[in-house]
Image 1 (cartoon, rainbow, N blue to C red):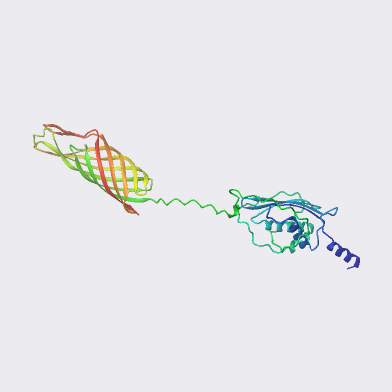
Image 2 (image 1 turned 60 degrees about the horizontal axis):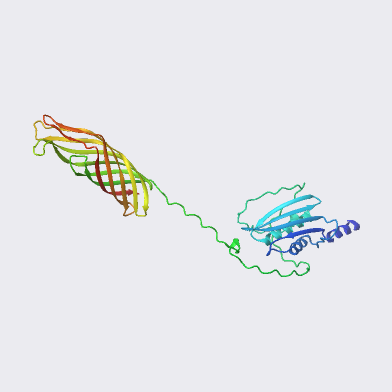
Length: 359
């Protein structure tokens, strides 16, 4: 290589880099001198911000955010204007990134020689925000990298700032514990139920009576649907209590009902139930010749509250009170004697049961 060309290249490499840097950062961040020193170390030559006809003008502003810091960097060079925005939890990382961007803007040939980046410090709190750029050739932004500290040029000491008393909430938001996630709701699987009940009835037959019932259903925490079978013990009905002719009455029904359930306490469930029951009212005559047994249809609405007390995970005790309103009112008549029974307009039932819940 000719000696003049070699001398010109060596002079350009050792000449101070013309850079004008404006750096604004909150307290606790590296000062402008640290950023300039890191840039000079990457370039391998000093910076000369006061030289006329500087090649690069940089304006950098660091602001504090709830989860860290944000760097807004604007570069003006012969290639055009470029804007960058970076975020990180540590201000030092942003200062090092600004030095790298500034060095590659002054000397683009340094981009491949930049040291490999450290693992990113950001925890993914911020989404990427692409910034607009009107440069015809945009220099890729290197990942923030830490450098060895370089002594900044001497500067006049600044007067000490008056201490600010800490106020409520002056703690660093980065030290705040993460919010506790809301607990997941407990599962509400579909369960089967089997219930055996004892029944006390007043009004369905000619007098108070009792019976048994069996119900099979499906349930969740807030509702239950049951299909049941029940029977009431026979009662005698006579036209004249002093005369023997009469009929022995019994009631057999199948029912379908639904319940809405509200949990009052962990060990207490209150339900409102309603449904229909259908069956047959059987009457067997006695005290007359040619006594026969006849069946009359039975159809009624059943409505009432029910209280359930779980005594184990799969067992509960239930207590219900039902109002029974017949839609069809059966009538029994003995030949030659007259009517001996007609169903009442309403009846009352108390139901006590034990419920098995599966699983």
